[in-house]
Image (cartoon, rainbow, N blue to C red; front, side, top):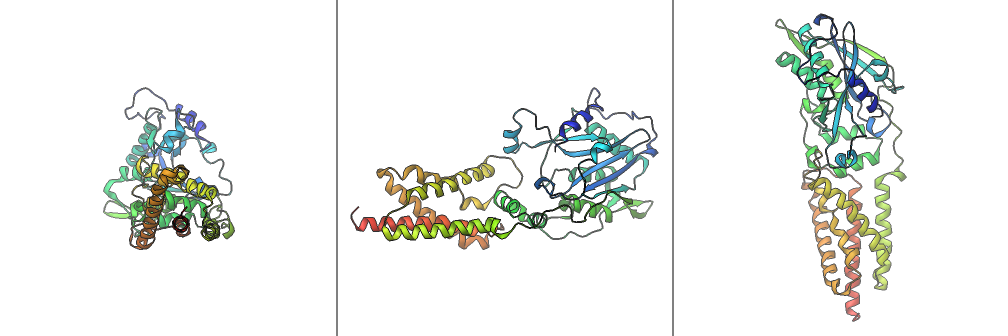
Length: 399
């Protein structure tokens, strides 16, 4: 990502007027064009956990890496549009010295493809045209239109029905695959499980698996191509451009006392202790209600924005909206007014009923929950039950 500006500058090297398919400008014959799939293994940062894919095109006079994982963070309104789901990424043509920099310790593998001169030229011309500033922008979708699926689609475009995938699909879901990559990153997986809905709990097809650069490399390595009635391997040569660990540069697992589950359990225990004390003395700790319901309400507002407003992929439908929603904010806003007391009590009853239903029904819902969600569901349930018990005691005392 940090090379976005450099990539944009590199794109300008290919700038020509118009948006038609460009002519061969390097003065070489099609037979001199070689196309390779480049796979960068996972890194330690969040945005590196799934690895990365590029296409390399070499001719007699040029050697370029085409990267579909770039974006212009200096564009006006970039942050607001990104949050709303308008994730516009770029295709950039980058020379090898820049393309391979910044990957120290991360394995980089090149798979040279068995293409005819015509097929290689088609990919070369397509990429050159796509990297032009007028054509470089595309709407990124992390499951269906990303740095790995774009190269796959381009290879399929050139080969057509001659390409055959030999591996079988793994029968995993998108969430299963993400969980594998995020195994040592508890908070990242928690965020995915919270923000992404039931759409990522469907079993993926073989082609859908290729949203992952590592899976793309695997399936392309096992693929074959029809050549005069004979199927030959798609990959003719495999080279390691930068050596590194086959598992990538992932960090050590998050210690339990720093995981979302630990903090969710801690919040539940604190809520139980405070609520128990409040029920005994028949007086609610308003400061705690303000903190708790405001926290849940704000995060619920973010989640509802993702579900109902943003155009991000797989954020809707999301059954987490049953237990995490902005309606919690009504309690800290209205509990200070005596005339709203009955309404607030009604809110607590509704919260209790919805949370009990959600907890009981979740095994039947088509969405997998993070284990930390269950203590987080129990926390407002306990607090709302406590508030109702306090209200009953106060009513009996005539307050």
